[in-house]
Image (cartoon, rainbow, N blue to C red; front, side, top):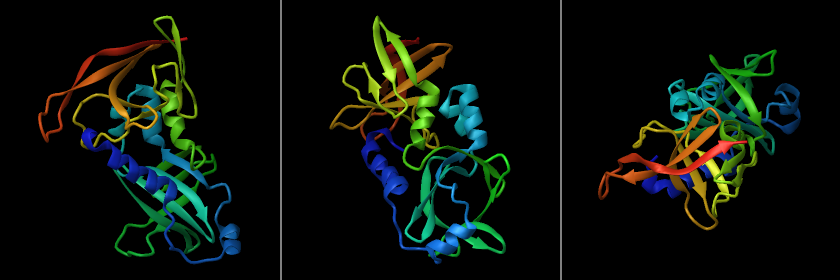
Length: 245
């Protein structure tokens, strides 16, 4: 994901994960409900990635734990279950869930060449996609917010002012910014640091680097050193120095 072409990438991601409604799988609502767990719906992420993210406080370091599925959003559309898949947070596609040979399988009904995944519910409430353990962070439309809020959510002191990063992805008290997100895709990173997106109403998000140490959250400007039509950045000066309350 190129920083200078962020708006296009964001539109694609939002389309894939919230609005895709392909006409795909077979089956009726009644027989699907009888064979597919009714509580499967939601936002699932790689457990290895999730544990590393919480341990290191670094999306860039956690990304090194990914070698296939980063996330899967399961949701129902009419008579079928759909799975919006993300691979290493870099690519995505929509697959369909079905019963097969006494188990559950995620597959592409339009392309037999696409690798299918077996889905196995676990006694602890997690699921396995083949050998990848997945944990649920929330429902299909709000689970993504849990990632950023778990890492940097809460109240901070900013030079005597209070800044709040809310669980729903909104931010209060940080100039005119109203929303925050973490950059999770580091496959083609041009910065070499953890990155944060801050949005203002009616504007494309602004990118910053960030670092968490103890109760300190430092947000740094990014300096473009790539020149025209190149993508290379370095971490600049501290723009926001926040202390968690």
